[in-house]
Amino acid sequence: MHNFSLKVLRNIFFILFFLDMPIQSFAQKLEKDSVNLDELIVTGSKKEISRKLVPLSVSQVSQSEIESTGQVNILPALNDFVPGVFVTERNILGFGVSTGGSGSISIRGVGGSPNNEVLVLIDGHPQFQGLFGHPLADAYTASDVEKVEIIRGPASLLYGSNAMGGVINIITKKQYQEGLRVGFGAAYGSYNTQKLYETIGYKKGKLSIFSSLNHDQTDGIRPHTDFNISNGYLKTAYRFDEHLKLTADVNIAMFIGNDNGSVYSAPAPFGANITRGKAALSLENKFEKWEGALKLYHNFGEHTLTDGFHSTDRNSGIMLYQSINLFQGNTLTAGTDLTQYGGIANQGLKHDSLLLVNDMAIYATMQQTFFKKLTLTAGLRFENNSIYGNELVPLGGITYSPTAETTFKASVSKGFRDPTLMELYLYVPNPALQPERVVNYEIGWLQSLLDNKLNLELTTYKLVGDNMIQVVGIFPAIQRMNTGSFVNTGIEFSAKYAVTNNLFLHANYSYLDLSKAIIAAPRQQMNVSANYRYKMWDLNASAQYIEKLYTFISPNPTVAPVIEPNYLLLDMRLSVRLLKQLELFADGNNLLNQQYQINYGYPMPGINFNVGFNMSL
Image 1 (cartoon, rainbow, N blue to C red):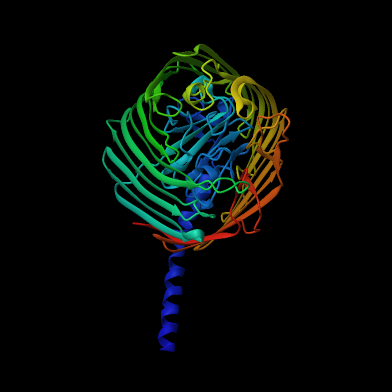
Image 2: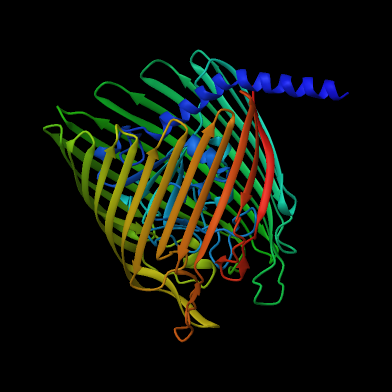
């Protein structure tokens, strides 16, 4: 029996040794993702363009970078790679939408509670509820993502309302290889947390299909904080020829979540049963001198809460844009957006009433490059809203690349956000509210060194906002008013360094100076991660430091804001690729056992673990 065990072990090591070659090939693919010099983006210009030519601050996070974090949801993974971004969470799984602002996404201190000032897109299509105006943070699973592009700062020129603080564009996976590809995986961890997923991709000639199913659940870190979500996604593309492509996709997310309330008050169990979905159709064209798209989308949802609230939401629209190269170094982009959003709700109304808003916009941008080094960009958007009237949104910017490795940027951009139907008519309503507005001034520097193995970015900015919607007064005499104004100034720095073929380092730092207290906007944030690969082994370690985070701001001016004590989080992930198709992993989170809160009254979990596998065929 002893000799038999030795033979088995010897054979296992023999197999693993010879499997090292395909594993190294896998690592080399990840290395290329990490040191891509001339990143091409679409979010900052509507057409595929070099990031160095866009005057706005745009970050890109690749699929391999997201996978290295082990996150099920992609939003927390963005902290590791994008400066100035902060995502509020609670519990072991499930962002939820709580009074404390869970599920908010803050960029440079602008986000909203819950998030309605940073626009989330899926393949360029807006994602927000018709009544409450915010996306469903729990619905964005890592298994569906090819890459994420983030505009840090106002992007209302191209995307209108809700892009006041920035844009997060989730670009979904495509099937590139011929034939059938299947992937699946599972994980189990602390608090009876379970994660399951399956993906199927198929390509034959001009037709490609990608689909996924996800299910996540947890008992939660406190009684009555359990969470359960299922997601389904299907994307089909047909390429007529090298110039025309038709894409259709649909996704749906259903979750049941419970909230036991703040630990500072008596337990108050509260539950939500939410269904959110999207269907979209896109016809894209790409020729030598012009490219563009026609996009149709429809978001839908139903929300049932244990307090008796019930709503059905929808958000539908048409997006049409075209870019043309008029002459050498010139690009003109023009487009129009038609949107209708709203829904039916019973809260605060005598009976269920249909609330709808119509929105129409036209915009144009002109970009001109001189001497292959200097690029000037100017744009203007005209938007008409059926409630708030007209809005003009200008943008101006410049980029200068004295060498292929160095780029300087400067821009001035305006952002705005229309009040949501909830703010106008439902909770603490005020039908007289007007849009929020912000102007952003920024200067940036991009630098690559060491044969493109080291990439640096430094940005300084000043955000001036006014007409901000705030809840003022002392309960029960509280109301929403356009009384707020702020000035946010800050510095953002990020670095990516491919030290060797096996060792990759990422770091980002942001400093945010607030003229007045804002929830979910830490003064200092630093994220550092290291990824080391040796043969079949992969080790990822990441740390996050947060300083001066406001977690509670009362509408009563006599009550002082609550500042969370500074905290340092350490996470680690160890994986082993036993076969080219099989990966086993173990994750450890909050290994320093920090006691901290992101939402007031909602302690985050201490040390927690999960183990699992990923399989591809």
